[in-house]
Amino acid sequence: MDPNYQQPQPQPVPGPGLDYLNAIAPQPQSKTINPLILWGLIGAALITVIMIVIGMASGGNTPTKQLTTVGASAANLQKLTEGADNNIQSSELRSINSSLSITLANTNRDLAVPIKQQKINLKNVKKNKTVAAVAAGYAEIGERLEDARLNGVYDRTYVRELTFLLKTLHADMEELYNSSRSKSLKTTLETNDNNLAPLLESLEAFKAD
Image (tube, rainbow, N blue to C red; front, side, top):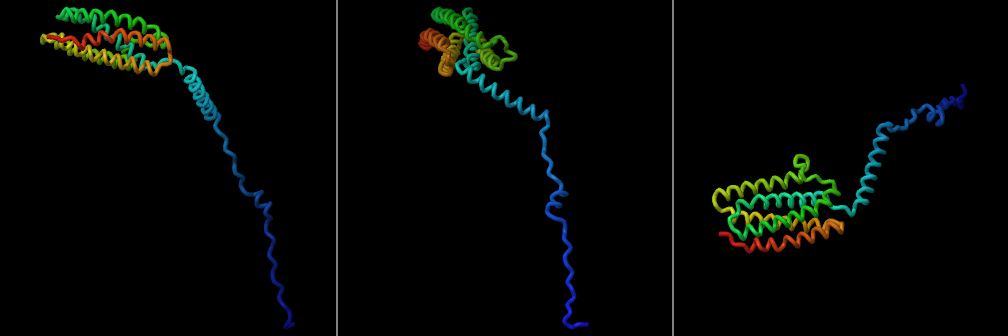
């Protein structure tokens, strides 16, 4: 054997090419959105746009909850003053109360227009939480007045409760005035608040026995 003879080295067997590997590799499958989900997303987007448009279009409307509070309070306050005549002992207080009943009747008459425009039902105590809350508050006051009548201190208690209610109504009307963009409602609130103001002063000046 030739000492200079070299054993031939085995040559590597060519493997599959890169193109072949790419061809047999599993291809990522594109995910498709369920048609129901897609239509649901589209519907939600449309509803959002519609709500935004409605909100912008109704920018000049009256805040419904605040108007409901004012309307329900004025209505309940009128009923309270009308029912108090038989229990009031002082002729002076009875005169103030009579004037207050008339003024509140005018207030409720003027508020009837914007309340109707906003489709507010002040008689719907069961379904309207705001109306129910106001009614519940006046029911508690009615119970306190009945206790006062039984204990012979009706006039004093009535003046205190009525003063508080008128101040609360004034604050609610002022809040509604500041939040509303309706010029007609602002005029109604301002006029009636000015009419109620001197009666509140008369109550505060009244000294019950």
